[in-house]
Structures are given as C-alpha cells and as structure tokens.
Image (cartoon, rainbow, N blue to C red; front, top):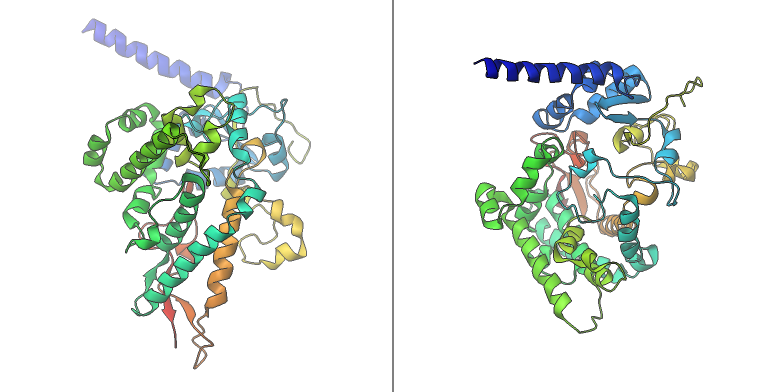
Length: 427
C-alpha cells in the first residue's frame, strides 16, 4: 500500500514539475497563447479528434486574441503572418535546413516516402529523384491522357443525364483524378470510370476523418494498427478493403518492374526511382509502396524562437489573410486579373523545398476538366423559358457543402454533407 502511494506521489510530482516547466521555464514560455495549450497537447487532441478537425479554427481564434505568433502545443508555435512565409519556407538552399516536425510526421504512416521524410538532406535526395517526373515539361506531355479521361467523364455525364436523377459529382471527379494519376505515375490499370459507381468504396476508404489526427496524438498505437496483416485490418475495418487491395496490387506491380529487364516505353514513378543513383535501401519495395500512396511584429517587437522549435503555418487562415486579399471571403476572381501577383500569394501547395510535387499536375487537370465541362454544359438559369444547350443545375447543394468545415490534412466537409450534387438538364 505504501509503495502504491509512493508511486502515485511520484507521478503527481512529475506532472507538477512538468507543468511548471512548460508554463514558466520552457524556452517557449514567453510565446503568447492560452495556458492550457502550453500545458498539454491533449487540448489540441480534444479539438482534433473528439470535435473532428476543429483545432485549425481554434488556432485561428487564438491569433485574433493573441496576435500573429501563438503557442498551440507545449512544443509547437504557429504563425499567421504572410511576411513570415518566405522565412519559414525558403527556396532550396544548403543553408536553409528545414526538418519535418513530429506533429507532421504523425499524420503519415508511410515513413519511407518523400512527404514525411524528416531529415533535410535525405528529403532533398528523395525529392530530386521525382522532381523531373513532375516537372512542367513532363506534365505537358500528359495532355492526351488527361483529354482521354475528360472524354470518359463527359460520356458518363451524358449517360447520367438520361436518368433525370441528381448525381453525386464527388466520386466522379475523384475517379477522373485517380485515372490520370494511375496512368501517369503508376502505369496502366483498371479505369475507375469503367466501374458503375466510379469505385466509390475505394474513395470512401480515403475520405478524411477525425481518426486522421489519431496518428498524431497517439502515433504508437496507430503504427501498431497499421502493422497488422491486411486480412486482420479488413476484419477490424471492413471499409478499407478496397484500399488494402490497391496497396497489394502496387506491391505486385513494383516486384514485376524490379524483376523485368525490359525497357518500358511508358515509365512509371517506380522506374524513375529504381533507375536513379540513390542507395539501394531507397529502392526497397516498402519504400516504393509508400511513395505511391502519398504523392517581427508590426510595432518592431521581436520574438526569438530557439533553434529546433517546431514552427508551422496553416493554409486556410493564411489564404484568407487581409494582408494578401481585400475582402477575402468574397468570391471575386477578377482580383487575379487586376493583380496577377496574387497568384503566388497562397499556401495551398506549400512553399520552399517541401512544396507539393504534384502542383503542376493538379493545375493541368483542374484547367482541362473545368474548360472541358463548361465548354459542353452551360449553367441552368430558371428565369429562362428555354436553355441554350445542355446545362448543369446544382441540386440541394449550398456553399456549406463546399466550404472547408474541418482540417483532416485535406479539407473535410460538414457532417451530413453529400458534397456537390448536380442535375444535368437538356430542357
């Protein structure tokens, strides 16, 4: 009994000492922010997991109350100031070292891939292998593949229009993206547009949710779960069956490429890696599978952050910052014509040496699909007695169905939202 009491006393003493250190002795003790966030990361976990990806908005409110620099966790600082972007995300340079923070690493179980690589130098080596593959010049060669996928999409839309039923456009748009990426980066495979439901089960397994943050706050448990055999994973979480099958197919594809001596006419992302001069350990099958799955204050005051401090910036609040955009909440695309410099004022794809590799591909797809769809379809106008050709009409879809509700690494929709739904009309 005495031993148990003594043990309990030691635990209490430890937590008291830790609280005193974090609140008053830590190098980050002078960083503004709520005491509870400085005291424990469970505050962030509550908003991320229990409330479902809401901490991004809590942090946004912190900035309104405390200023552009706030302490969001005991060892994490968040900045919401456009003037700091180039300092935190400098261009690739041997002097500007940027290691991945543990809070970011926790999002990804694919520890061997480029995205969650922590070490600065290792990340540069891994990224260099893939940069050419995703260059603007290389992506331009994708025009035939993207146009073919656009044709598939338009044909499916024409078929859906005959049913006179509203369609859920989210799976269709995701299937289009998946088909392009699969053909370009992973090699030919089954087209999602050839499936009746556009492989909705696969995309359902990939839909972000509150459990995305579980791996950040309970990383060890999440990794233990991911290490289970696929058949056990499917039993515990049946909805991921389509995704597990996709990973297994990738493994088979990689081994086939590794064992083949043929010179492939259409190279995949795996060929790019295996034909590079990086160490053999960087060409292991687990590493390749991972790679595929993831593609001063204004008044003059200064705040010194110690070397090694985890510092982050978040795209959603920064992309609406009034220092960049006047009336940021109003849809006004003309602003980009009036001031083309605004095209570079966003953090959507990140910045610096860790900017998203697939940015060029994303723009190419978005521009092609948008132009192709609206070249064929107009916008339904209920004020007109007759429409000038086939039109698209939103069905039970409001701004709340496309507005970011939660942060799950990627934007999450509000609970109950069915996303964008359309009715294709010929009247």
